[in-house]
Length: 66
Length: 325
Image (tube, rainbow over all chains, first blue to last red; front, side, top):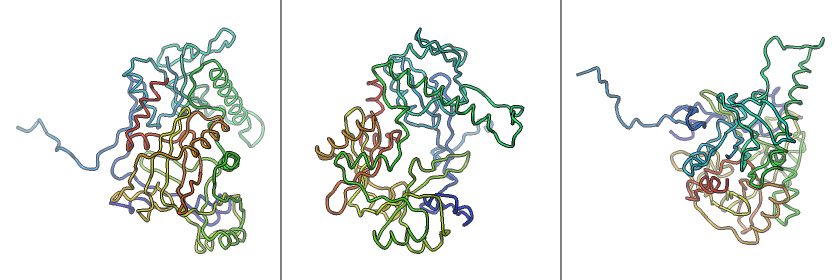
């Protein structure tokens, strides 16, 4: 974990001709430790941003098993 | 009732709404990027601007206060283009879509304008919410603030000359940077030094670009300004190589220290004058304390994420905003 999660966006020279210089400095990541999910709460009428935790804090209990 | 103009991906909106709920204040959130709210009717002389949300009718004039966090309205709350709407004129452009987009923008501007004039409690501004960094820097100088030297360049030679003259340079957007979150990937602009190697790889000519002389810093400051009050946070970004030029490239294994702090009173007076000049009631101000002990003003973001200041510093900004509204 660390900086390797973030990558620099590479653009072609042809594309850069029509772009301002700050387009040379765009990073991206795949949100590997949890894609943010914006869940609309009907009752409260606002979005809640859920993140999947990086570490599981408990195992899934399968109640079908005795 | 409190009206909040926002976006669905703005985390601060939900936190403020939580506090409004705790204070038993009714609120209506209109988001730029969803279609939950639809414009129905307006009769401004009779104080009626009617929207429908989830089958319920709201007159926006019934509100007591407004928080303009984002535009809150878009074509999604007005119309929806269908495939059959393609090219109604005999030409190869989407002229009518651009024209209707302009008409939509006029309607949105009018709704914001007339509501903002009608209420005493208005936090944020539609009209002044989108700032131009170059214009802001000029205004900052007029308010007695120190700013980085700034230039606009269009080719490699100009950039090479500036690198020789300024020694260290960076580039920034004139308006907003890239902040785009898709389903599984996020794109972000960051600030980094432009060196001779960078310049070598560039095309001969490029889109007009903003360049600034880089300031060597002791630390960065993020100051949240709200209705004349300052809530400041020092960011010790120099302690980590990856954040030395821009703290938005964090090292997750060694995060920067974010510490509440006070800024000098004369600096507050100058920043207050700037915010009033820009007609901003709220905003996140970026400053640098340079190696010579000077506070250098970098930019103000009227819609910056203030929770990043609120939580590490225990400022309870979300609660303060809800109390004001």
